[in-house]
Amino acid sequence: MAAERRAKADTLTLRRRLLSSSCRLFFPEDPVKIVRGHGQYLYDERGAEYIDCINNVAHVGHCHPLVVQAAHEQNQVLNTNSRFLHDNIVDYAQRLSETLPEQLSVFYFLNSGSEANDLALRLARRYTGHQDVVVLDHAYHGHLSSLIDISPYKFRNLDGQKEWVHVAPLPDTYRGPYREDHPNPAEAYASEVKRVVSNAQKKGRKIAAFFAESLPSVGGQIIPPAGYFSKVAEHIRGAGGLFVADEIQVGFGRVGKHFWAFQLHGEDFVPDIVTMGKSIGNGHPIACLATTQAVSNAFENTGVEYFNTFGGNPVSCAVGLAVLDTVEKEQLQAHATHVGDILMELLRQQKAKHPIIGDIRGTGLFIGVDLIKNEAMRTPATEEAEYLVSKLKENYILLSTDGPGRNVLKFKPPMCFSLDNAQHVVARLDDILTDMEENMRSCDTLKIQHPDIYSLQPGSTGPGCRAAAGIRPSYLVLGNLVIKSAPNAALASETPHAA
Image 1 (cartoon, rainbow, N blue to C red):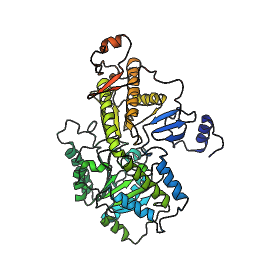
Image 2 (image 1 turned 90 degrees about the vertical axis):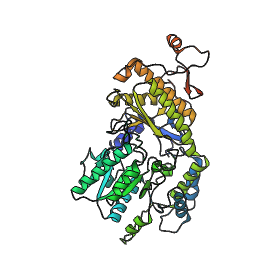
Image 3 (image 1 turned 120 degrees about the horizontal axis):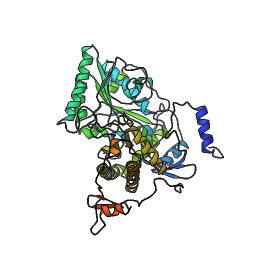
Image 4 (image 1 turned 90 degrees about the horizontal axis):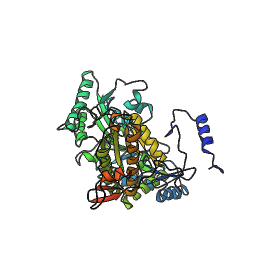
């Protein structure tokens, strides 16, 4: 650590000189210099405190003391590669196995989600003897060359689609071909996968695997219709392929109802391979792949050793164990359900009030807010989303966008994100959207006159009278619960929040 902290401008100058411009920053026009983190908060060089709604990597909270302690204590004793016998790696594998279906009983440890997905591709090809892969449109599975090839999000802007890659429609019931009014979107989207497989087979291609994020994130915080994975697995396995569930963004209790997002598709659905990363180590570089004994045996039968210098080292496994302990002890999975449900309801109230919000979707603390320019066409409100995110940053709230149109606000905060945080973020969101409707009016949905959804307590002044007096209502109604929002605060404070 430097003895004296650099000025933000000096750090930015050095970064621009020494790092590639392809390594992009959040808020590139005015980046935030973060020097400290704690729980769901980040702090800049001035001591200003930001609510972090971006960081699903810091799963149990930035710098969680139990995770930091576990790494420190193990570092003081030993860190070496996994070719030496050590308790941590088997203890960690056993703990992970207790969270997964019993068929997923063999574990490989790595350093990143990209490594895990690359190994999944190797395993699938070895087991099936096939080469080809089916992926979802707009998918992203990692930065290695093998994974860029199966990531439409990337390859469409690079060398294009390889002949061994086959792209199925994203199971998006808001923007896709089969929407919320379809009687059976799971069956319809799964049939699209069947069609893609059939077309590949007609060309003499053979399917090794279907890769999918259990909840597509880069694609726009998508929630596939229940049962979709089970039906897809039937088509893929019928073609001799394996089903790979990429849990790198959404595993470890984030979805609330289940520990793994693939479990949203029913107890009977079991992937052939599950990959894990990001949140698994709370910021420490660790990743994992879980698979069946049969798939692992096929890989082992080549006689070629799989060795990863740092994968599964004692410190990484100590960190992984500490993350599991924290999720359990702090009941973060149940917390994600509770806070996520209330955040979803608060956002739905905003949708009723602000026409620019076209869709609210999510589960637990994985939530997307789809912003639209036009209600009939559902045109992505890309520029408006970028503006909104920048204004939230001025209000010390860090949020980002995703989706093909870069118009979906994505909530993936640390799992300790609180009910107070949710209420505060939504109140600021309301303030900014109201200001955009009054002053920006850049698209149809910012020009529509809409009813005020604020409810009234008995004996309170009516919203029309309060609005005429220049006073906005100071409470939201959530079921029978009245939640106070902040009074008429300015959209951005002139001075930072104290740390």
